[in-house]
Image (cartoon, rainbow, N blue to C red; front, top):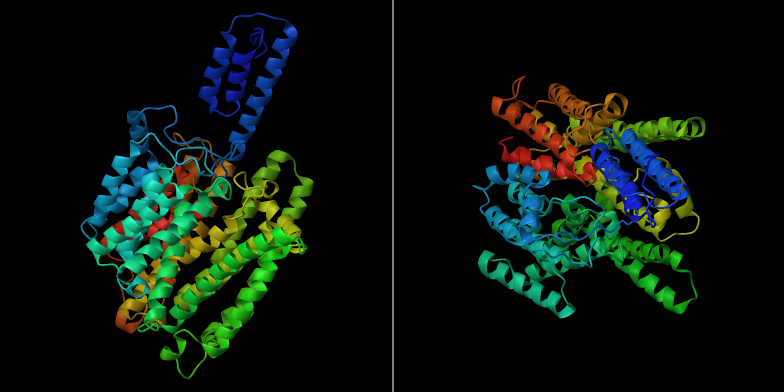
Length: 624
């Protein structure tokens, strides 16, 4: 570096040196080599400045490489908006890159065994192959990751989940869930590739809805509502003017399709007076709808306060929250909208009291969970504060990773006892309420509610990695994704168990193992991978900053924890299983764990959310 070129403008050398700060070691050496080959023209002062810039960039890259070994941290570019895929490259190059992205290859592990059950997945794969070669991208959308995203993986997970769990969750969309998820994924493929004018958005929604209604028998109103709700939600998540820098493709599509499914399910249930629905399902969907109403009222209040200039816009979530609470209180006291048809003798408020204060539930809600939360969160925060004040940068970064993963261990302590006690349905309901509260609090933090936002910033800021930064105005989603990662298998498997008539103590050990898959993946596997990676990781995976030591700890810890869960799970007389699961189940669980380990290595998304979304349908597809 001391022998850097001294050309008149130094442009080539500066570019090479800057590039060296963002590349891996081998690429950095090639960049410095190109800089050294530039002719020497100019004074030694310019050479010294260039050498200093190159040395600083190389030192920053070396520090970044060392601090993220085996962890979920990933260096973010200065500009969070990624370059559109296909820019400056021909169609064959784009198609080749898209075909060989590791996430896309891992998605085939779900599609191939599920194809016999759901031939629609082949249609989605063909549509992806056709669109992957298009050298266009929607410039109105942006993603968090600077690297290539697995587009087929992003659009295939939703239909795969519907194929595996749609029959059990027939009450959601009257058995049409898989068809509508396919509609949403095909629409998302085009939305991510093409720019649409306002009238074209409407035409696209109507065209897709009409085709789905004609080919799949989905009511036209449902199809229009699903496609429209997904398009609006996806635009809000990935718009470069809103929150595009805070989501990957699969994260944005997850939220968009979740909103669309909830809207259609509520419409279907309301029109049918929620006939055939269980009371806990009705209450859960209504909770989600009121949360969506809170978002809409917050946006409306923000717009009104901005124009009136009478009340600060920072108070818009408070105003919207009070309005939503008033409307929710009316529903709790009256049960209007179909509740009375299913429970004429109990209002929603009375049902909620009976449900959460049942003797088998009260012990978790009233003393076990509060005790663990107070002791656990207080201890972790106290240790984090003291470590930040007494450690240097390198040690502090490593300890920050360990402090963040301590919350994963806390999740295991909170959620495993109800699963082992056969209370998966109650746990799923409580996780839904907690997730919605997290979303409301994050809305208040982002909108800068006076008093609350600074407190939340100071607390969460100690545990964030480079993907999230409160000073940039980013959404902080890691803690929410930790909760959702543990909750998604509980929601899916509880619904499947209820459809078979196995609930509570009637569940089998294998059902308990599937219920706990999110807790084991995130609470055990991811935590052990990070701890071993930052402490002992030396050998890196190709094209990834993850380490082989961390990945080995991920797989081994999950399999050992799964064995412990099987041994501790209750065995009901009518659903008794032997001390050892069947060979087919063992192979399916081990295969799903290994493939999830590879996804954790190569994903550009937040693994807390992505791993359970991949593991659950994969385990079912492999025969587990």
